[in-house]
Length: 163
Length: 163
DNA sequence: CCTTGACCTTCCCATCATGGGAAGCCCCAT
DNA sequence: ATGGGGCTTCCCATGATGGGAAGGTCAAGG
Image 1: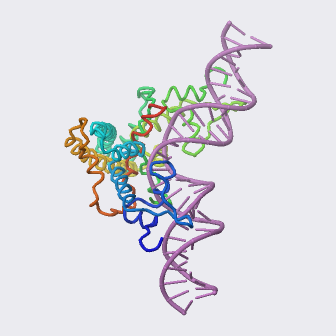
Image 2: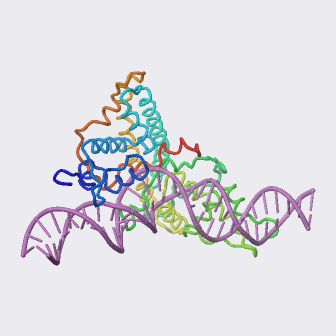
Image 3: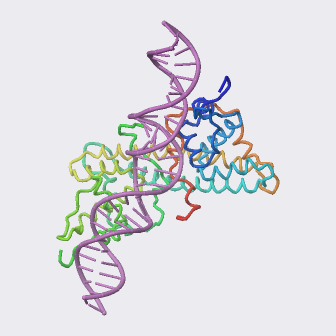
């Protein structure tokens, strides 16, 4: 309280992590419970902001919250071997590369199709023809949906919430 | 019905779309309600399977269900101008390219960091040092979370479901 | 002293596409 | 007729995020 108390909104502004997310990170255990004022307001110290920026940077690099928990633990342990950190990073890199490859494949296929579609007012459309093609491997039964690697796409960019 | 009735499980097997998803597509209006037997079982005709394969193929190309609804409508309209289809496809391509670029950026940054980390049992770690770096643009306040483009990552690859 | 408005709190809900699982009914082959 | 597998619906979870309601708090200005 008094003068220098950093509230959650202030912390959000200073770290680029939304207040909503800060509360959520605390609730799920990624971050320790913040200290509270008598009236229940969360207060943050500089060290906490430091941690929050760490989290944001890691998120920006695509790490899952789970991976960030590991990274944070390693960060706090000043005697940790850097090998552990590197391993997590390389796992993440592999993950990113895998997803990129998948998206690349889709993009290339679509580009090929779009190229062959004149896109005028005539109904002939190689794109639809391809989608409608029967002779497809009946079910390349992937236990892992190929979409899992995709994440939220176009979808609601069109509707109300306009993200 | 009698002999040749295709049940939802059979349709799933033949099209590569899970029964769960077939029901969901129906419930959300992507597909029209299936015909039912007296006892309530869904039955599918060859034309329905055709549609399901179309949907699966489109999903495999990363189209959102919403976009697929548009594609299906165009597909059914034999007089549609191919321009509409092409537009949807190009939007999708742009979307894919955007996500790829984003992932590429992350992957490159991480690769650079991982490269500079010797990854042995000493605690020096440029990766953690980078994450902990203070002088970051306070809040590159993107209205669109940079993570949105990422989708489900590493996360549960570690837990129970082991994808 | 009291109001106002900006902030904080918790809680619930939605997203997107997908799967898990329960409870109960149905159908066919033994 | 019984058993097992398939079908039905319904609820819940996922991951990370935002929206919004209902209500408490704080500080500044009247």
